[in-house]
Image 1 (cartoon, rainbow, N blue to C red):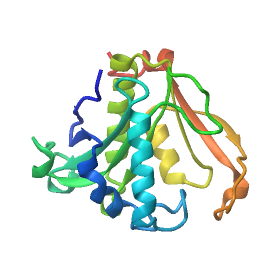
Image 2: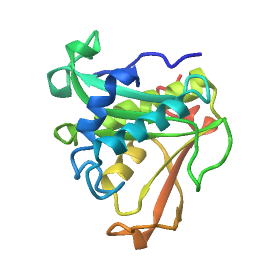
Image 3: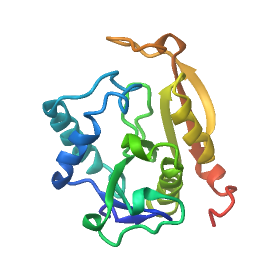
Length: 205
């Protein structure tokens, strides 16, 4: 099962492909977007490497992977998703790969939710909206048993998205950092949505 094109109330989600590389470079050129990930902008070569890793991960479990999000009218509330990506504006990268990090389970039925938005689209509820659609896809289409999400404990914005999407806090952990970012001493947090939880989310059925 290849990754499908997905739609939310306001966004068109297109499976990541090589044609999207320049948009990834654009996204990662803003150090504020990567404040809690690298603490700095990424070079084009670094983005090329991460793009290749994403495509590799997207091929490991049918239906999981990465999507590029496009919106109309700046993704404003009440807007409709564009019919095609070239008719919309690039909003960000939405992620649902198999869990693969050093502090994550090696289990093909567990995936990791993530999101990275162009800064001008922050605080419009778009990440939460896309996250709910990806959770539905994970459980209802792919058949995942659990979806996790991780971020720095100090990243209040990302934690807010996880909570708005209905995920629950699981733990705080302290990974080994080569070059710790400010706030790293407070650790990372993990949230989850299980199949059983999803069945009780209003509107999930």
